[in-house]
Length: 113
Image 1 (cartoon, one colour):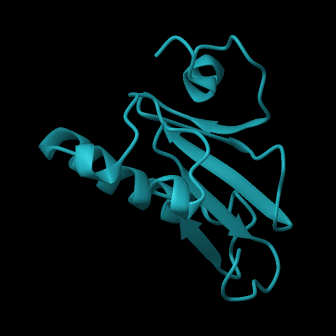
Image 2 (cartoon, one colour; image 1 turned 90 degrees about the horizontal axis):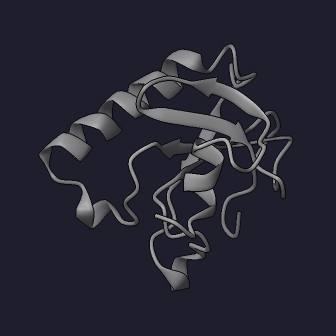
């Protein structure tokens, strides 16, 4: 997608604080963190919504969740973490490229964050 900020980050056109990268995903620090640790996990394939996750995308998302769990120590999330996927304007999705917020590093309040 030509105007997608996450596609530009993936392509290296916009710098990011990369934490992890493989053939399917990129994990980088959020520029406006709401927790001590706030990372974004972005699939390299552009799609906006979970409803677009056909068989191959669903399998990739499963591998992504497994990868996040496997990286928890390296990411500083050994004491626990929260995963958030906003879907649509009312849910707070501001970039229409599916992404997972990874939050942790401190006790997290429930609701609103």
